Image (cartoon, rainbow, N blue to C red; front, top):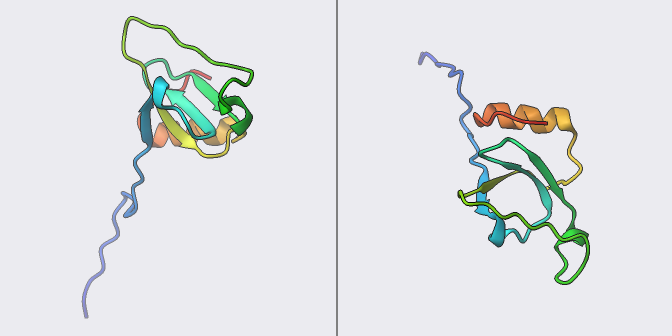
Length: 91
């Protein structure tokens, strides 16, 4: 009889999609890795020439991590996902 070992770590660890601001093309909820700020981008906000337009200018590099494809994910769930991926939320 084989002994089954249970691991504390998940067998299906998911890596978050990490992109530059310029490459943002998919709706969802994103956290800026450096600041922990949460940004919600519904599909309407990504239409070329549409409003609102989000522009970020910075001297340092800034990366976004997609924490959900749902831009309206609850803040509590968004914080939990951040904690699971060692991102300190600022929201």
